[in-house]
Image 1 (cartoon, rainbow, N blue to C red):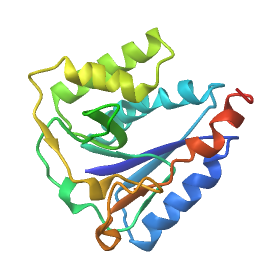
Image 2: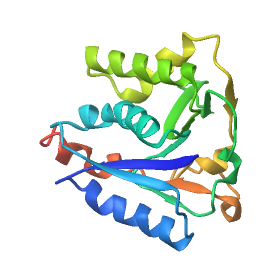
Image 3: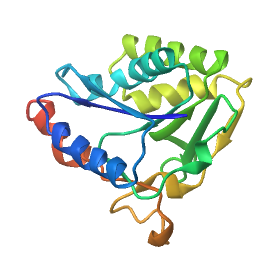
Image 4: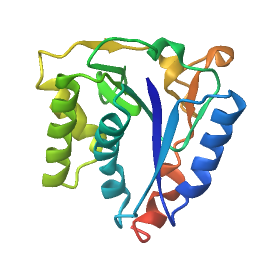
Length: 190
């Protein structure tokens, strides 16, 4: 398994990826790759590059991919994902507005034919609309009953400030939700 992330150049995500990279260095993680991406002009379009980047990494590295967003920090090596042996591993967030929201800030894709099919379908759906990529991914996954999916614990996708995980001593990956701070700037003030 390879940890993969990406950031858009000439955006505030250049600073976010430095925090991410520092957390990798502190844990002495060697098996990772970070991709610099061209700013597509909107936060939504930039996010839609995630699927393409994951597929690119899987093909280049010939390995399973643990995607972690650029605005995250790894606090403890996520050993759960080593040799996981499934098509997809994700976390479903339960809230009053959505009882089963697939979160994509931390997500695992096995190096399998079915995982690649999901990635291709996700890419195609992203190309047809301006919808947030995470929602497009959930649409694709929800329409595939043949996938071997393993859900993981919230400690791998703790959202800073949300309080979705109380035991901070066991946090493996924390997401700082930079979008809440920089989305308008990337979208030209909109």
